Length: 259
Image 1 (tube, rainbow, N blue to C red):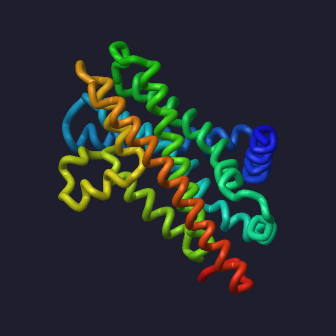
Image 2 (cartoon, rainbow, N blue to C red):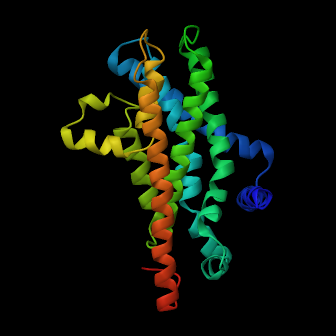
């Protein structure tokens, strides 16, 4: 069962990326996001007239997962429809949650690599000091954040069965993550409604947890990390529930799309 899960995850990865050369894939997954990180950090430097860019490097390093977790995973079922596999997925009697999670395994791994590269660039280009940071806890935070973002991307992907405008949906969501996760400015500066939305978004708690590692006291670290994991688990369960709803509608109406 476990081997079949990993085999399926690898086949999904090959199906999405087989057309790219290794250099093209690396540039798309890591090169383009790193240029984006540098761009936003330079804007923050000139806008706030500061050379201490630690919080912006942290936030934007986590947002490097957007390319893989939001845009990559968000178009899963759009791609399945295009390649003619949607009928087999809907009609097959197998459990759907492992199938959905298998799609997110490799994007999560690549998102972790992209975020690590973001922190490396932050240290080399913007002088972020990691000497006093517990690197084990930092690595754990990155893993938890990418798992949560992956579950969020899987949740978004199910809406590909309900909308023919997924590019619009995913682009709007990517900007909402920039606004509400605390990557570009503190969540405390948002109005009350914005702070509520921020707590429902992935990465918000992970970014806050990583920021605590750069302070002398980080007593809230484990609470924030657990909250991030619970957020990811909630999105995974929501993805399964929404997919189940779409599946039942397809079986009842004899069509695979709800729009």
